[in-house]
Length: 113
Image (tube, rainbow, N blue to C red; front, side):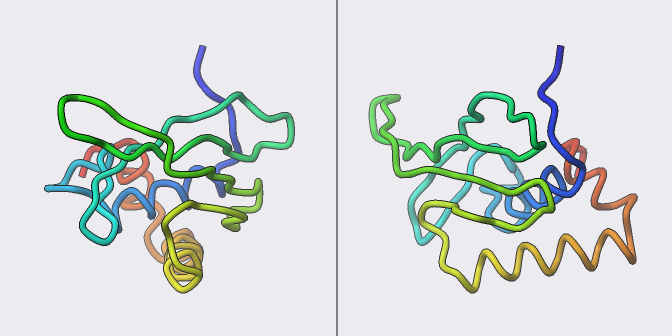
């Protein structure tokens, strides 16, 4: 079984992954010179995405950098280490791409581009 969330929430997470991808890998995010990965939390009945942002440390270690919550409507409630402007840009980009290029947005979500 997969993880269930709304398409809007998944689209916003895909945009954040693309915006901060490290060497084209959206599973590793580079934010202000540090590398992180997103650890998805439990499934939510309302369709939101929750989890933790983990900072990568030397020696294959990591530590929690903060919490993440993307609401079911695709708005970013909290995303550790991102500035408000960056969260707004991700939400705006997701909405714009939903209207103009949903196929590319879907590919970002699947990690195929």
